[in-house]
Image (cartoon, rainbow, N blue to C red; front, top):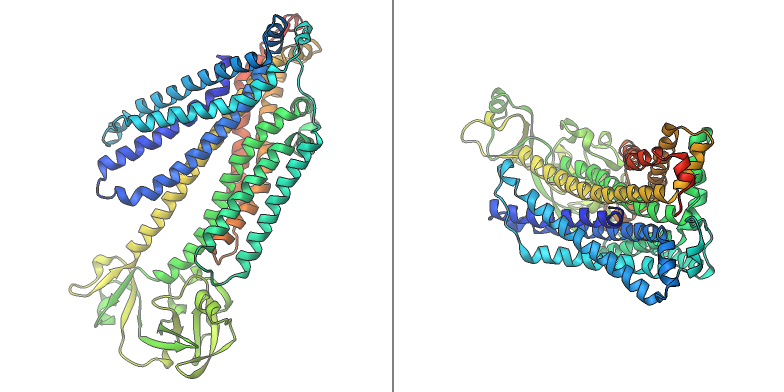
Length: 590
């Protein structure tokens, strides 16, 4: 079983990768007409599954390295009896690739079996798309093979003299060589330079040329990739200061101090595991922060696009609508106006009487400043004309003051003017209430239904994205569990010594659990430091004209949940460590 721990994450990733394929197959079978509209959704799912597969490969690399390190005496004996480094490395690669192949086949088989449970939810059972299954298995096999290359070559360089040693030793080196320092610092500088370039270019450009948004997003992706690679490269040197910060609360107790020392005793291992956790956390925090920001903008835009439950057009009788039980009945008139060099449609809607007035956000000015000879503009129009609240502009040739600039948009048109500046009949009415109350023969449009459809679509996309990102976290947690389990085996003699000097089984178990939780806390702190800046950078890249809104409560829950999950991943290894007999441990030879 121990030899399959390095590729357990590959099994999970293959399971979810093929589950995505089966979900698409079920969708196409049950919603044949609407399936074309879901192409972008499944493209998004594919992107997140790809990230999960990469994380699984990184987890496998870390656990392969630990697993091979525990077999150093065995490998040294093979070297002593004549096995060359190349032959030893090839054998380890074949071993790792074979277990990876079996793990990916198991993942696909489990997904296929789970797909047959779809009829229990009232959905058609999926088929067995053979080509995607082969692609998932082949892709997982290639990733596992790549993941095992570096650990295999490193393990094959073992000296035959290692066979004479009586115990395994941990890699306690936190120092990294000058070439690695230079590479890591170069990547970090590149990430920062790209970040600054995107921020400056994105904030300085109001009217973007075609392709600029895509270019900024590409630069943001490259910057994030460089930042993550720099974290992996410099991780062993950075883990000690981060551990000192994260371990402050734990050092107040003996068990906590031992846990901090246990994690810090193998800085390279801790760096590789926490880097993987940090990747998942940064993606989740960036997603929920970006989604929260876009939700704030969306709320303001919804307020402008759907200011009431109903829009009634044509000849209307306000009294008739009120007698029918509709509330907030608000008539308006339309007019075409020339604002500066732009021609647009305006209404005399009284914004202050809208039920959702609190959802509107003003960049400058306020609703109280509205009056005769004044106009309210959206941010897009105001920026196009280089106007702000208090500025003067010609409206139909008459000097007019900008009363306010609204984020998102203004209701029913591009501008709002005062009712004294508009002539003509009533063009329509806004009202709130059930559409069933609208009198027969009256033309209307349900703005409430349109608003709910868009809100549900956005919520669904965010939920899908977060669900798949939690898949990345799940794989990282599996990596923490595998790393902790292999570490417990490696440190059997250490556990025996701790038991011999008086540590109880429960205390030893709590120490191992605390070590696993520390991996999650350190990864969360790093992910927090990376995720929020890149969420802001993504918002800037998209050209979203809205301030960053960090959901503090949600971010705090993510950090706490991750600490709990990683600590939970250490429970089984903790039980194993607690069962160690002091006498047997002191006689063990690894």
